[in-house]
Length: 204
Image (cartoon, helix red, strand yellow):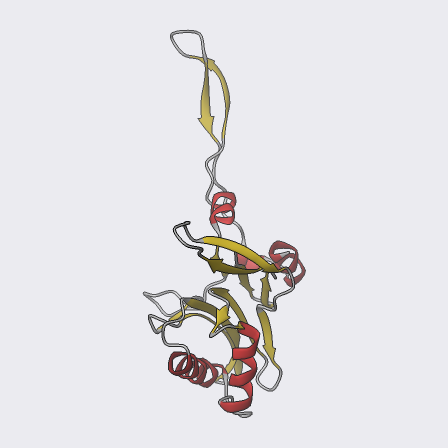
């Protein structure tokens, strides 16, 4: 199981991740099962030199070692101190794809780039085996910065919470006398006006 979430609001970017380590195993003719290896696996990392956060989900055991080992190797071998967020993303994916080309592992990579004298947030989804780099916090049509939240891993519960349909009794009855239900409006979350402390609470 893995679950990561990245929330980006005007005041900052918040990243969070679970810490459960799962291994898949198979014995003889038995079907493959998932085994909990640890509840203390690091899946959230911070590159101090660039102020860039990385969170991992999907397969977090790479070549028989935890994903934290791969992040440490990247920092030592391929991360250049003066790189900005876009260089970090490119170098990181080049490193991961060459070292672990078949890894069904994904990452959120987030930080800021100085553009025209202004710090601009950059949030990316990166997937190793398919070599995907996708920016998450821009409008695809206009290129404008957007605010919101993105998650990865086993996010079915999160999807239901944010995209749920809620029904309440309407106070009326149908032809058979049974109470009818009406759907509550699905109010949008105001990401554009959300304070950073609320984004932290939301991720927690």
